[in-house]
Amino acid sequence: MIDKAAIEEHIKGILVALGDDPEREGLKDTPKRVAHMYEEIFEGMNYTNHEIAQMFDKTFEEGICEEGSSKVVVMKDIDLFSYCEHHMALMYDMKATVAYVPCGKVIGLSKIARVCDMVGRRLQLQERIGQDIADIISEITGSEDVAVTLEGYHSCVSARGIKKQNTKTFTAELRGRFKTDTSLQLYLK
Image (cartoon, rainbow, N blue to C red; front, side, top):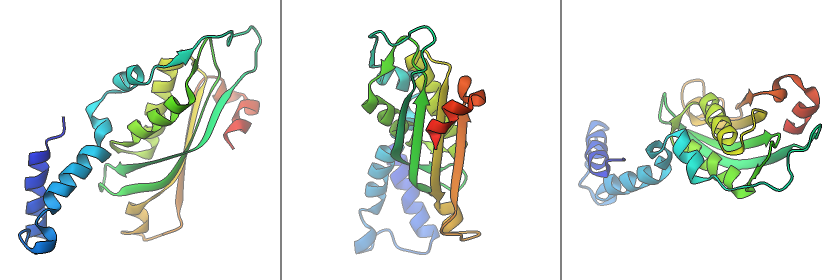
């Protein structure tokens, strides 16, 4: 679990290390506010992928798997954010597309967005976010045919280092038939 007291103490130390006074009016409550914010934005760190799958395992089994069926479920433009594990910098304006071929059951649509949100609430790499979402969706639906694409901005690129404000990063996690079936890949555009 997230240790808010330790975060408060460390934030005070960071403020001192930056040359500021954590007791001045504008900063007095900053360590407490940051600890509360971290508890919220890093909530996903409290759970494994399996626990997240159990948390959002709401599926429906109504004649979904038919022999030779070419059904596909695609949810696009799912907003999420995360924090880069290398710089603890914000990954923002991220959009996820999650697709899968049903095999016996479908997941409630809001649960797909909730999975994305919870996975993002960790110190992450964009590549791992896609892998984790795919793992969880596969576990919940039982489908091996899963794809997750992510596109977003990284403040570790836009605000520091190379300082390229309009540079987006795109990643794709393709599994099962999404790797080889170009007709399925069209749904990801």
